[in-house]
Image (cartoon, rainbow, N blue to C red; front, side):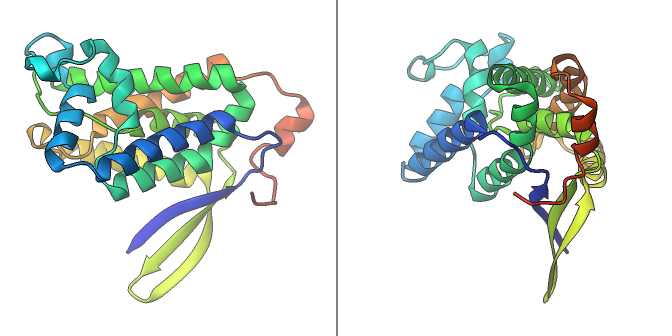
Length: 239
């Protein structure tokens, strides 16, 4: 059984330039990365991924790998991805949900929102296991913040989900609060059963980013008119 959100019915009036730029940079870096030798990619992850033990001073990278100060790895790690499913999943979620958050906040506030939730996500993962030497990479922490913000602002927006079971394939429409609520529940369940020392998905980062997005969106969202409030999350036209 396979569920994959790929669009929403919540159109915007402005082009999501910042979201598009993030998608462009992440995709360009990944496409360049896949043509590099494996050892170069591994060095890139060590130098620019967020490593808790390095961030908190429990360990150090060897000379050639020390390219940036450890705190900057929180930002650079957001633009690295480990595989096709990693990049496709993250960028699809940003494409679906990022435009509405960007329009509501405005471009500058959206950048702050995105980076702040990404920072909280990275620190949540790092604090859980501060001596870990496993690099954390990916935009999913910041994008989790976007999901949290979307849940607050557009809980009843319809999300188009691809449902695939053996030979049965169908597109179904599900309310955002079900899709995103179900997603964060899965993150909590998966986190409870995860082995922190084995690497893999950074569930703590997802949870930290999502929760910070819920709180931050309420502080940063621009005021809307009564008319706009009625429209939000219920516009029937698709993108």
